[in-house]
Image (cartoon, rainbow, N blue to C red; front, side, top):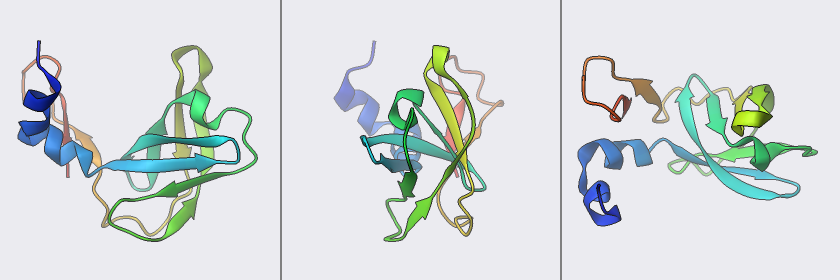
Length: 108
């Protein structure tokens, strides 16, 4: 089992942190991951029954309005879309070549 300090020192973890975004709504805020092309994965409870959803990328001062693309409340997951002009922001991609259990995501 990894400890937090050990995990934070792994290159895979450090690069994934660059894909973390702030998700804000009229009811609160949480985090999500930019997965590609302006799509964000977050927890459903973060955006549940909200009036609006805003997303902020760490390397960009601009705030983007996002729309719900799909969700599964039972799994507490939501995908947001509609964020244009973020192609230069870091995103997560599957790393099917790694072959190491539990480490199938990398940041680009």
